[in-house]
Image 1 (cartoon, rainbow, N blue to C red):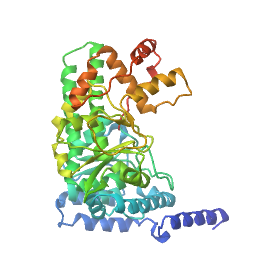
Image 2 (cartoon, rainbow, N blue to C red):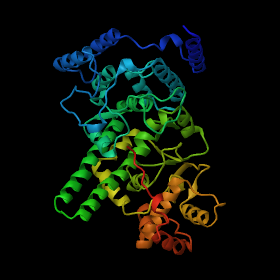
Image 3 (cartoon, rainbow, N blue to C red):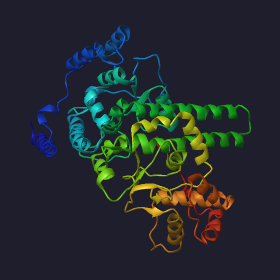
Length: 458
């Protein structure tokens, strides 16, 4: 071993020690050992959904041939991933990538056992997520199917929301194959540490898995309606508007998904606990979401249209920890979020002014007022005063984007403020005096054109 290799190994050992990882357990199992474990798994009939012998034989044959895992084929359903299709080349993972997984898992386990809900921790044990090497998707996919009837679909990057939810409608969950850099906690782009170590355990919470599939069905409903409308016109401008409308409705549906499946909190034993995969895949955000005074925490009842609309009309960013988290009293309440309600709420949200991720809305059941919280009209003041005087504090991208969108709505429809208050059952503060007179001519001149790109979950 040369000096460079010795130095690198010493570095890796120090990192492993720092995270409490046993160095000798970071080495990936051999191909033969993985095949043996997979064969034992496929033969297990003491599971909710045993795999039929013919399916198991075909599945094992593909793994034994060395064919990389691409998409689960243990059911009669599949999904076309198109140019986003990928495969897990398991033996190509480096020691550093496996060490990155092991360190992340070690940190996640410490935070999860302190802050995750009971059901999520049960899923971790069931799928054996807490290992020290990156999971083999052949084995993981089989275990997931045996417990939930869901399967994995391997993708090469962030995929469009339409495809993401198409996968959900058929009980496929898209997973990437890359692993974040060593000792990196937060990641905007999903990797195995998010997709697998964050999401997989949520499948064992039946209402959460059902909510995920409901979003897939809602996507189908939105785009079926879009396609029916497209069939009735050949006018290019009309077709463009119809397509834009479908994408917009899915965006508002995504927000419900974001604030529940990805970043949801639940009350358990009179304490707030995390179940959202986006939270639990980041040890830092896991602690932040529950212990920190910086974010706002709002209790919602998914049975109430008002609260579901609160999610659909709340904009957010993915570039940092969330500014607001929404808490449910119990998981059973998520059953009320059917595909039909998702679509209906999305249509209502498309017609209303929206809130930023910092806004406190009159009528909110606030458990914790965050240090970053603002009133619903502060975003307009920040937009105007920063434009007039750059020394004034500017709102973040979310506040800016929401303010511009809302002001455009108010310019076209002054009654929109009253409609918003009626929907939320409380008086939402009006836009401060003078703001509209300042905004309209500047917007007409195109000053805000580059600041209104909508956020997509993907």
